[in-house]
Amino acid sequence: MEQNVIQKNMWNTAGKAGLVLGLTSAVFLFISQFLGQAEMPAFLNSIVSFILWAAKFIGCILIMKFFMKRFAAENEGVTNSGTFRLGTIMAFLSALVYSAVAFANVAFISADLFAEQMDAVMQQMAPMMDSNTMSVMDTYMENLPQITFISNLIYCFLYGMILSFILSRNIPSKDPFADYKPEEQ
Image (cartoon, rainbow, N blue to C red; front, side, top):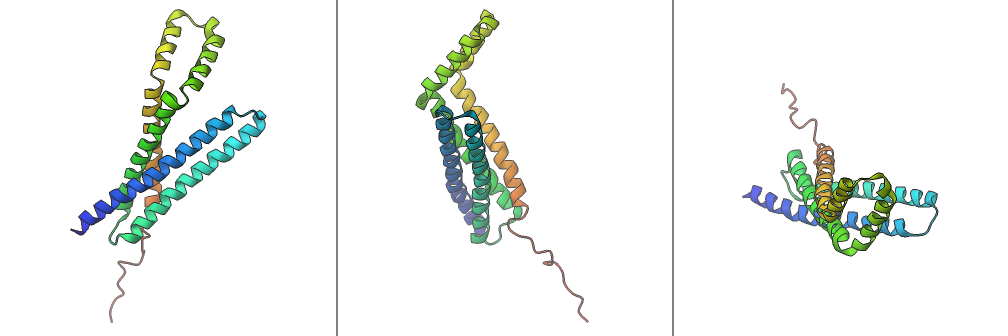
């Protein structure tokens, strides 16, 4: 019975954490997109983009670690493999949320922006491409939202799974002397 409670708590925690992680990454997506359109010097834009990327990178690590530690503290009997399983579920759910937002961004929210950028690239590269390459690029543009969704889902899930593997090694903390029994005299 206790295992069922832990499993239920795992999915509840993973759902909340996945939503927080996915929405955090989505907010950074829109901030980065806004900064890309802002009229500022390229050097300043690069510095701000790097700072935002570092904040997102470190923030996602800390958020995942927070939820894993909280889950281990609230559920007695959780092992390192249990926290890894939690992290893997969190990674999948957050990847799903982020990929859905990225899909909506490419397909609906900023579709005009992506179409304008692709048209600019096509006009610039047109003299160097033959008709077959042009038709492939048109097909690519038609499938860009789906490609964005699938590639983000795979990338974010793998990143989150590797991160959960690394973090779960020490959550919950292991007592190195747990099995030590001094010899009785």
